[in-house]
Image: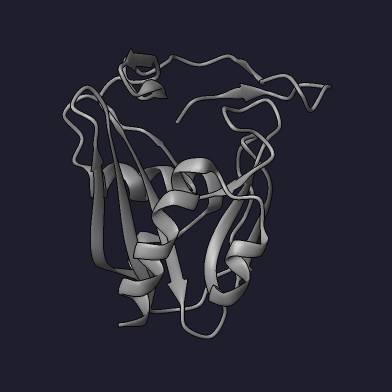
Length: 167
């Protein structure tokens, strides 16, 4: 996990003090610019009693101020499920041992991909903001998700993900 020094301004990224992973880089192509040299992945944690766990993204981040999933860049050679669970633990304290993978959904643009790992919460847990990438973490009932300003990628994927969750 990277080490961070707190920033005094919420609109600027934290100063990194630890080593950076080679996957932490932008890639560009015909569909735009995306974070994660080896792709990216995130966790959509679903608790039937509470809804889905969403992250309010820090203002300084790409598409900052929107709501999305805890996740991020994959490490070189890292499987998407492993990377998504690692990132969700680092950013929101999602405990891999208390969730079960239900399904994955892949967006593959050729030069970049994003894997959404949908997990069922088997034992309730309280998410914890554990790095500066989150303004807030919140359990959101399924019908209320679209009432939030969603990250564009998550907003596009949400109807299909919700339909699979409710089937």
